[in-house]
Length: 138
Image (cartoon, rainbow, N blue to C red; front, side, top):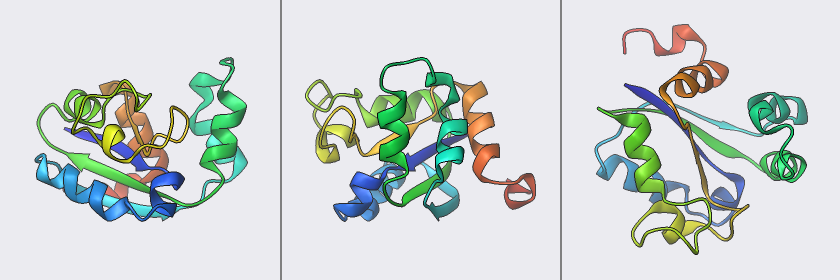
């Protein structure tokens, strides 16, 4: 099963992208595609449209367009649920020790990594960043 993760601009700026990727691979994820991107405002608004009515939407878009992110298509059994488990709670103060966010997040907003929250969203998010031909044969 494929899922999508984004190593966010804060983690890239802090020099933690390689550490996070190594952690994910150490947890059994196989890297199937990767792209370093700087989202435009339109791309960020479209990608996070599900949060459009939430009070944090505008600041999320601003943050996600503030620098480059590393977009990852990752594969393993139970990819979506397991990735959500190992990245930890959105707020690093509440994240379990040893999770990505406990190790690398700066705050609830600058939380180092995005992960798809359902198999349906994972499929939509992977397709958003990686055209079907790029993932052929996986």
